[in-house]
Image 1 (cartoon, rainbow, N blue to C red):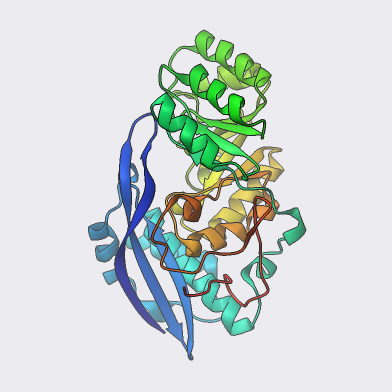
Image 2: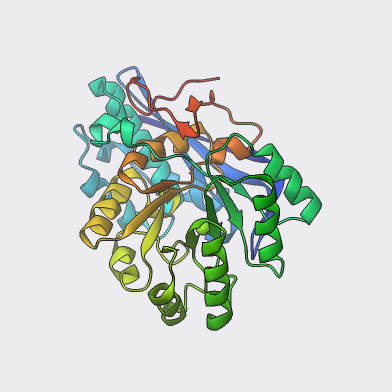
Length: 337
Ligand code: MG
């Protein structure tokens, strides 16, 4: 088996601002695992606030010995091996895991969604995310989003209500809200939650600081809208910690170290009767199709990476009626553009 990798700068269509950060592009590491004439594709998206970089990814990959990966892939042993090289680094571990899944599907001539036991007919719609902006530009972005079946709005500024009112003056599609830890006061947050409930908001991500489980749990206990942990939930061990603090979790492959552990997180969350959103960072078709293979097992999907970026190096997957379409191609179903 041969591993090759190269950095790629993924550009966003619009400057993207959330409660604590703002950016116009995202560094990726794209990798390929080649075996017996088949190539598996993987991707790491390294948004700056998660702590990984092209340098940490390169250093990590230089320590990976691909002779460890024997067919059929024992993903539990592989993730142990990767965790033993160095803890953390979930995005570059995800890139390896995604490439292995793509390769395995190609070697077995089966699509990944089938290998993972997902039912394509259960695919949820994907929300289209709109970052914090001036009211004029925000309205323009909402108008551009006509046609998507759900909109996610980043809140956590002083203008939260105004932004929602702008959305509602344009469309009545289901709304998801992400505060990205930006809310501070419990009672004010609860008032806002009830107001958002009246506006048709269906879920709220990470209202308060991830380091303050008590305030998040206080709000969850009282909220008529499902509250989901995102920044506070990264890998499998975090699902149990989120139980009792949030109604559900936001799983992202770039946090979970890939598809294998994401599948385990889904199973554990279901055991705990928790809701599941599957989300993404700024990603190409590669990591998006990897997450889409698991999305039918989740309640909601926020897999808008390819919709928000302008230089996706792969072909755009089929997107129909607000949903990613899973195809019958072996592996992820990725096509080169
Ligand atoms: Mg979030």
